[in-house]
Image (cartoon, rainbow, N blue to C red):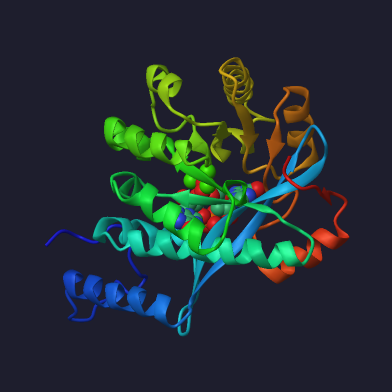
Length: 283
Ligand code: C2E
Ligand code: CA
Ligand code: CA
Ligand code: CA
């Protein structure tokens, strides 16, 4: 059998367990994780640079494992994708985000939530229907959620992805191309995609203060996005200097540790109430 990639658990040890057995047990654990409420969404705010307010947060999944502690998504999402279990996770994420939005609404902070959609989800022709169903069940309107889809996910099978994305867009969902700049998507596809926003990958943002090439890429991406009528957001903003540079370049919004780390829902509420950035309902 193939060697495990870095998507698996850290239990790659000297025991007699074979790789496939380890995968099987990780699979079983993941299934239980949903049933036992071990998955949790953290939320990271996005600041709109035109109004200096917060209307949106990104949902980022965590696995709170009873024995192994907090497992970051990079350690189980790729595995879930390769096994198809991602469909169940994505459905859980959407339902959870809709519940959270309803709670925040009653607390007077109706934040809009972006959720990450994986490559495998985009190949699932049932995704738009499932989405619509969940929205209906939760009595949600389309501005409650938006989607983040990586460039590479779209380019896995651009034609199939396009169909799913078009349907989701027709249902009224806004969508962003995540990790933009890392996935070699052709501009011809970019033009055809029904997206509303580009999210510049943090690998370009982190170094833009020291690396002129990165700064040029960021500036060009902002101009490209704007020329195509899209909003542009930068992720991975960690300091004031990067913030200032992005403001000067006309970037529309910002996300990163400089504003806040991803937080559990209640922590986010407390943070928001004391934050220098005020909540504003998405227009
Ligand atoms: P992503 O969607 O590109 O998310 C951004 C990652 O950067 C997050 O890591 C976030 O915590 C981190 N980050 C935010 N601000 C900063 C910063 O200022 N500096 C640095 N160095 N990092 C920052 P996280 O939460 O570990 O998520 C990693 C990836 O896992 C995500 O990348 C996304 O691809 C995937 N993921 C997370 N949640 C979900 C989910 O619910 N569904 C799916 N399909 N994938 C998810
Ligand atoms: Ca994302
Ligand atoms: Ca990203
Ligand atoms: Ca990423």
